[in-house]
Image (cartoon, rainbow, N blue to C red; front, side, top):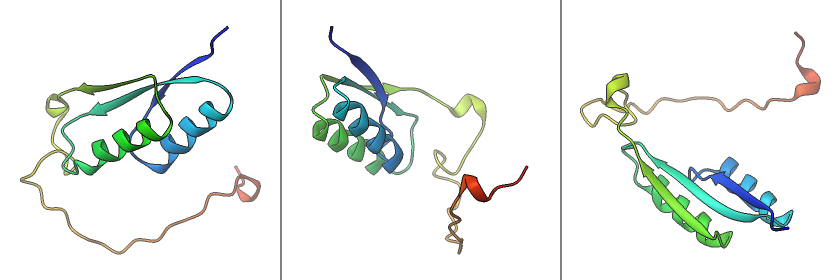
Length: 98
């Protein structure tokens, strides 16, 4: 029996790692990328490279229009992207108390 996996490939590290884990576990990869009109087209280009690297059987890029949900600096070129300093935080489940 052929094992198949549909992997959502965003172009980021999480989806890349997930796709490679699926491949390592013997799945045939079918890649799906969402083009929501993001300003940074390198996300789509990175997704294409990842898809090629995992030797995906097929790669579908789904175009959707998110403007009906409102504006966002991710998709609206009229919004200013400010560079701000930020801190990366590591999440360690063993240290979290609820």
